[in-house]
Image 1 (cartoon, each protein chain N blue to C red):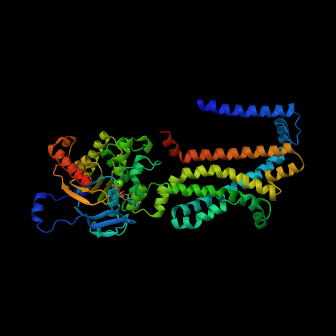
Image 2 (cartoon, each protein chain N blue to C red):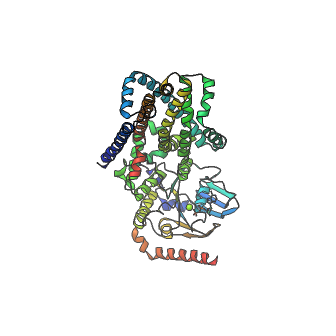
Image 3 (cartoon, rainbow over the protein chains, first blue to last red):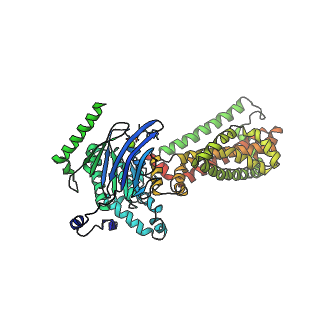
Amino acid sequence: MLTHKLATPVYPELSTILSTSKPSPPMVRMAGVSLKYGDMLALEDATLDIADGEFVAVVGPSGCGKSTLMKLVTGLLPPTGGDIEFDRKRVTGPVRGAGMAFQNATLLPWRTTTDNVMLPLEIVEPYKSQSRSNRKALEDKVQNLLDIVGLGDFGDRLPWQLSGGMQQRANLCRAIIHEPKLLMLDEPFAALDAFTKEDLWQVLQDLWMHQKFTGILVTHDLREAVYLADTVYVMSNRPGRILHRCHIPLDRPRRPETTFDPVYTEIVNDLRAKIAAVRNAK
Amino acid sequence: MSGFIKRTRAWLVAFALLVVWELSCRLFHIPEFILPAPTRILEVTWQFRNELALHAFQTLMTTIVGFFIAIVVGILLGVAVGSSSAVYDSLYPLLIGFNSIPKVAVVPLIVIWTGIGTIPAIVTAFVISFFPIVVNVATGLASVEPEMRDVLRILGATRYEMLRKVSFPRALPYLFASLKVAITLAFIGSVVSETIASNYGIGFLMLSASSRFQVALVFSGVIIIAIMSIAMFAICIQVERRMVSWAYRSQAA
Ligand SMILES: Nc1ncnc2c1ncn2[C@@H]1O[C@H](COP(=O)(O)OP(=O)(O)O)[C@@H](O)[C@H]1O
Ligand SMILES: [Mg+2]
């Protein structure tokens, strides 16, 4: 099982009362980060702290630098200004201990669902050294995760035999099978129809509540952002700047009914109005 | 069912062409040293069957050896060109330049360097057929989605792991596509070399037959090369079907 990450204190209320000292350091910290592609400023002065286990959504119009922000946090791209920390260490190159998923599921067409999800375990330690000697245990681990996302019976299918939504489920599994501290999602549901999309919100939330990773979801769908995140960051048009930080006080687990909750709709409308105001101002 | 009809149709067309050919030869009394009739070619083929088999075997062997060297070198160069931009920048223009040289013009050089007989035929078959393999392997390696690359880099995959688990399998359909071109080219290479510098092989047999005006025997040679070439092509397709069946299935979906 994957539960060892859930080893929270037995008396959480008590522990929060007792820990009068500093709160735990953030998992991701960006301080005045900017990025230029050549002369073009894509991201300007991004500053944010993401706590351990927090789920954050970044919303903004296309081309505002959301994907760029993801690449910066994971060290795939060096910033042209500012500082980035992940897990208390300065990011200088591609970070270890993160998972990623994109709009394009990029499953390997010659691997079955199980083998696709297995891929990170063949690369990341400590699983890599077990992958020969103890493959059965790893297969069970994969099966366990597939069961959670509703792909339990599809482990031996090839990607082309799966629907778009199922491929994306497998993609999510592949992104977190190695229990990364940070999950990066770049518009993972953008290509799916509305029904499938909302199913997958549920799946993603289940996974998050199960593994308690820190999550960053990049999206241009406000409803999705508010539904899934603890904190929503709103970005401006290019050059991307962080305009608003909005805490979402809705209880977990959120359910499809949550979308009819007045608090939910109010937050969505409020954010939408703010984005509209910014766009009209330009 | 429709596949069967299609295949029969191809055979029927081929057969009809042979009949037209045969009839034209007979009706217009075309002399044998210009265009022998199919039945005459058949007759000569049978008459020289032992010699033809011997030379065909020689050509087949040189071609296959050259072809396998081309596969090995082609994959190695393709991987080098496809996975390092430094190698790409320094090697690719050279390769293109090399490929634009008409290989037939190089055969005399190859003969000077390697003597006559089997070796120059193998070398020519290799030289003429490795280029499409290099290009396709390099292209296939480059066809990995940038997102997949990012995922692998974040996982901390080594270059070798990326190549073995993702890029190379991804490049396999491209490799097989190039093999089908390469095997045909390899036959051209060995036959050309045999016509220039050998006492063995179908190329040599055709050249000596044509110098004796045994045009029917030349045709026998042509047909045997065609048959061998088609057979190798079919083998390539079978291996391809086995090894990259996923590439076909995903298209069917
Ligand atoms: N590699 C690159 N080189 C040059 N410009 C880029 C590159 N990647 C993205 N851009 C530009 O930077 C801006 C932000 O891109 P991106 O971060 O992908 O936006 P988003 O994900 O929000 O749609 C866009 O205008 C895009 O055209
Ligand atoms: Mg993007």
